[in-house]
Each structure stands twice: as structure tokens, then as C-alpha cells.
Image (cartoon, rainbow, N blue to C red; front, top):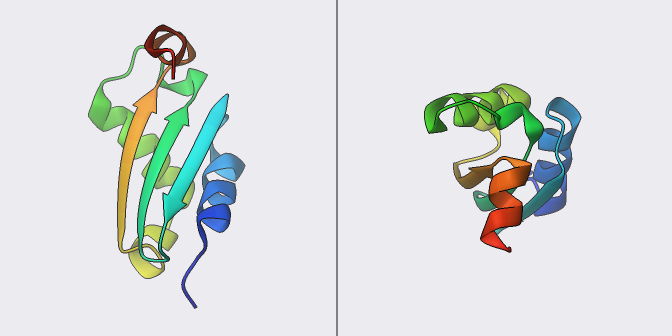
Length: 81
């Protein structure tokens, strides 16, 4: 069974503190905007690794593709998104 965007959102939220989290998708391909204080001082690859860690084995088994925009709360506020 393919996960819903809501399930993917919950998977991420359960493993990573998020100030804002939006996930859209069709069951196998997802787009996410993730705002977390955990991203402070981290490069893009380290931010993505935090998200992948929160998803765990689901990234291999359930989720085919995940495109993500990872922002700190300050970056998100500055972007006005």
C-alpha cells in the first residue's frame, strides 16, 4: 500500500522537530517543505540526511521519490513563504 502525503508528513514529524511541514504527492513521489530548528548551522546534505533518518526504512520500501526544501525558521520567515 502506498503512503499518503499525510502519512509521510507524520513520519517526518515523528522523527524531526518541525515548525512547518507541508507534504504533497501522489503516493510514490512527494514534495515537501520542511522547516526545522534542527537545520540550524547545517549544510543542505546534512539537512536532507536528518529527513532521511526520520523516514528510516520507509524511504527504501514505501517512498519512491522525495523532493524537499529544507529551511531553518529564520530562512522560512525571510522567504515569506
